[in-house]
Image 1 (cartoon, rainbow, N blue to C red):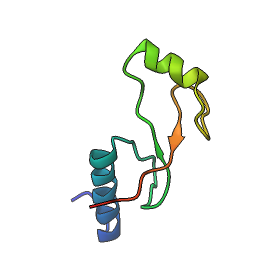
Image 2 (image 1 turned 180 degrees about the vertical axis):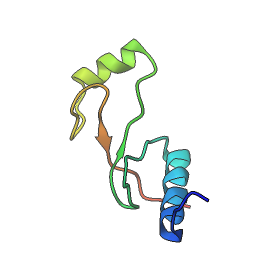
Image 3 (image 1 turned 45 degrees about the vertical axis):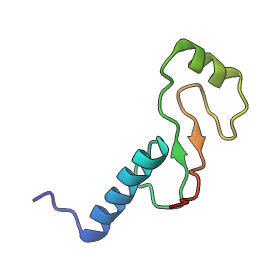
Image 4 (image 1 turned 60 degrees about the vertical axis):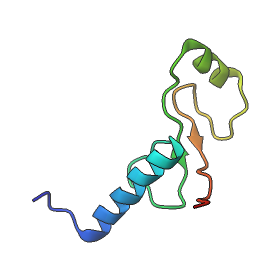
Length: 73
């Protein structure tokens, strides 16, 4: 009913499982093996840490691409 193909449904399930396992957001057109995005900081202190911390690929405190750990289960 939504006009999606089976590959898109499987990609969506992979993205949802990755988010649940690693607490990381998956951007548009994300594929397994791609980088994710750290979720928004929950506190002012977390946001300040992001502004001063070392994070490869960080664009700003609110947009921080991040590698996703390999599955261990």
